[in-house]
Length: 317
Image 1 (cartoon, rainbow, N blue to C red):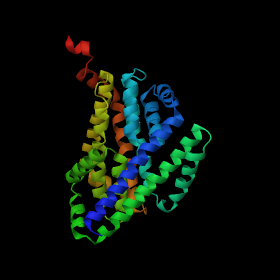
Image 2: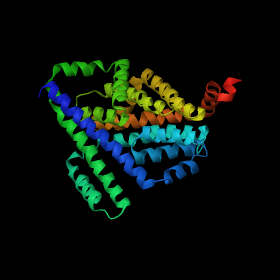
Image 3: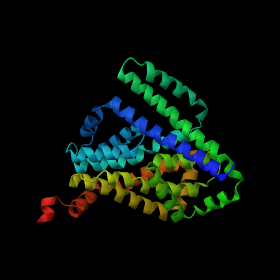
Image 4: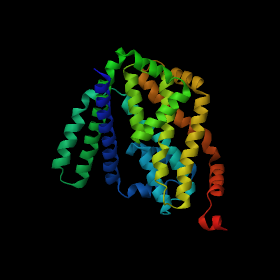
């Protein structure tokens, strides 16, 4: 298979994956309705419950960007305070790693089952809730079909020496981070980026250190859409978007500096798991450690950002 054919097939798989993520999030939001807003408003009274809420909601919706954008909107509407939003944003970083764990599981051969059941429910469901549940199942099937398409496309790359040389180059932390950030910025989905990395890992086309470097970049690239979501919002909403960026930059910086010992730690924890499982574990461990380390500093973040981005009347004065 020529590079052009591989690229075309990979792009097709990525587009199917992105569409599936979008539809999955849409149908889950419709099922939950205003209960998500009520849940976030009720269970974000302190940083710990905010983090737990962010984990739960993001794990359900499958997209940290969707959750953080929702939080920015709620802060702008004064449903949540800036302080409440901080915990949810950090929790969303952990919640998004659940999708990596699912992607690392080799269940592509069962893709037809959720596709078929979801398709039937979408078209014969008697209530909107039944149809939305069907949409969830159909979207999950599409998601794994997109991953299967990418996995099928990249398999021939094992025989391409030039591709192997390129991947080896990504083991340099800065190159890997920049590549991950750029691709994530283009596709606007860290889940899609992680899906591609885990797919390469399933075919033994990437090393763990290169995968971790790209993962760190994906954490940076995913900040772009949340920053765009702050345009025209209140000062508290802008602070929320900036916090997401600052928090990710700080954790990524530490990750780059400690990438070698972190890679060894992941290998030790993952024991005899497959490479794809190690990549998924690295994603979860990195984001969890980042939250554990920086959560105690939330009051400092809050004061610094309030001072940096004051209310309009204070700025004018």
